[in-house]
Structure formats: structure tokens, C-alpha cells
Image 1 (cartoon, rainbow, N blue to C red):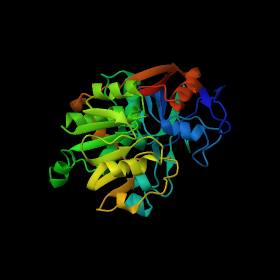
Image 2: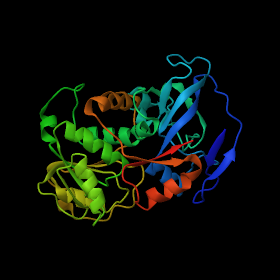
Image 3: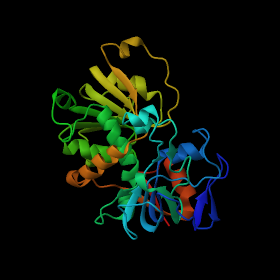
Image 4: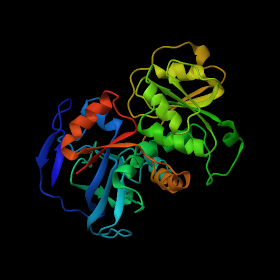
Length: 340
């Protein structure tokens, strides 16, 4: 197999040849068809997330075909298309797992961070954390669903969104105006879901980024402007996808009394000091950690009904460093995807 490998943090990935691994019990070997390039990959490569497995194959938005099934794997067939997300293993016995909060597991493994990921021609995955994918979508177009889509969906729920499985209620009615700070891979997917559900989406981009603002409006946003601007109406909730702590007080200023600010990233720069008046009147600031398998099932079920489309820029596997650089410098609209 070939793989782009991170050997030391803050250095370029290197193309390496490795023996194709053999799946152990409850594992699947898949032939990678596409792997999304996520901002979390950038945090790992740039040394902003501590203690990665090194050397490491990054990548946790994996779409591929089952090549070999390990022992004790049921429910999958050779040749089937499956997806592999960020959460790659949980212990199942810690208090969080037993309480149905596996996203907070005490002993997790994360794809492309503490276990090898999908910047490769082949990848191993725990079968319990793989998901069947529909055949009617292009491999590259579906890859961003495996993290950008899932973390956006979990953030959306944390912001107060209800869906059919939960039933309607007062909280559903309270989330009508939603702000999205940082209009990248996650926001461009979530904006379509929220607009489909009839919510008013307000997109916040880097100041002066008129191209990103036009992109947001094309996906259903009713307004788009710079992150330092106030929206035309107070927001019921805001989700921050950009890893910029200075956006927290700005988002708090934009939400109404009782509103919620959700920090959707795994890494963020320090939040600056801000006056208590921005938090008062029962405003909330919460973070989102990882995802659960239930999140994946819910989101992958709603995607075709909402008609979500992804805007992707394709890169060859050996151009992974170019994709990371374009993401780092803000040159992308939508998502970057590697294709071996």
C-alpha cells in the first residue's frame, strides 16, 4: 500500500510504501476510494493536538470498499462501500460509554490521530465504527459527510435543533435564526440542512471574503457578512466552526437572551477576556466533543431527504500537502478530498 505519512509534527507528509495490513478480529481492511481533508487533520499535522500516534497516516473522512473482513465481523460484505469517521474505537465499559455518551469515552481511539487513517490506498478500521454508504453518490462528494457533516450535525443538535426522531417541542420553535461562524466544510453542509428545515441561516466569514459570502447565500443563507458584523436580527444560537477564540465574545454579542453559542471544533485559540454582560441573561457557551455512532446514523439518514450537496476540490493522494496548505490559507470553498 501507499500512504502519506506524518513522521514529525510541523513537517510535510511523506509518501511511503508499507505492507498492506491484515485485519484482526472485528476489523475491516478497506481499499480507500476517497478521504476528506479536515481542519482537524491540519491541527494534527501542525502540532496543535498533543500526542498523536507517530508515525501517523492522517485522515478520518474515509470512503472505501471492503477488501478483507476480519474474524467476527458481521453485517458487511466484500466490495461494499463503507465510511469511516473520526471516532474509531471506544472501550464500552467506562462510565461515559455505559451512559450512552461514547463521544466522551475515557479510552477512545481516533482515526487519523491515535490510529492510522485514510491518506492511503488502504486502511484498517474497527467494524463497529464503520457505516454502510449509499451507492448513488460520488466517493469524493460523500467523504466530507464523515466528519464535517457529522460534527456539524452534533453541533446543530447542541444548538437546540430538534429532528423527527425527537419530536417537536418548544425548543424546536426557539431555534429559528442560526449563525454559522466560519463557512468551511462543516458550515456549507449544515447550512443546507438548516435551510431545508426552514431556519434562517446567517453566515459569518473572514472580513471582505465576498466569494465565501456569495457561496453561503447560494446554499440557503439569508444573510452573509464578516465575522465582526452584527446580523440583521438577534440570533437564537450560533455555531463557531472557525478555530478562533476571539469569535466567542462576538457570537455572544449576536445571540439573544437565553441564546447558545456552540464551539464546534476540537481545537481553538484562546478565548479573550470579555465583559460578563455578554454572558448574562442566561446565554450559554458549550463545546462539542467528537461524535457518536447514533449521530452518524441520524445524519446519514437525513442527508438524502435534505438534498445536501457538497462542494469539493479533488487532489491526488501525493498532493496531500497542497490540500492542507490550501485549507490552512483559506483558499478552499467547501471541502478538500484526496483520491488515491
